[in-house]
Image (tube, rainbow, N blue to C red; front, side, top):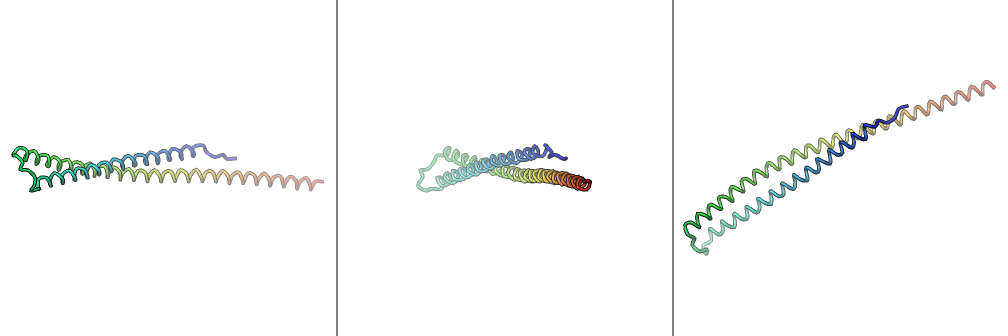
Length: 149
């Protein structure tokens, strides 16, 4: 009589661990994307604030050095914005890859669970056949005994 294989629960657990790990990676990547988006928004608002200060007519006239420092700071803000946008696009690409990895891990999990279920059904079917064979043999024996008497 056939018994259920011990490998299937292990493989299902391993596939579930891969799905959980992929989900955790996605959560970290999403947090990174949100952090970069917040940084970009902060830099944009800071740049807009400094641009408004420069354009305001009521602002006191800045000296040459202060004006150069102001413009240099605004250029640095633009450079930081570009860098954050670049990092954000990389983080979004990484997030997309991690989502694909999770989908593949979920497919593998479903496959392993299905194989485990198929094995369990095959074992149950084999047990039923074995029991039916035993019942048939018992019936034949009883019939033979009753025929001998």
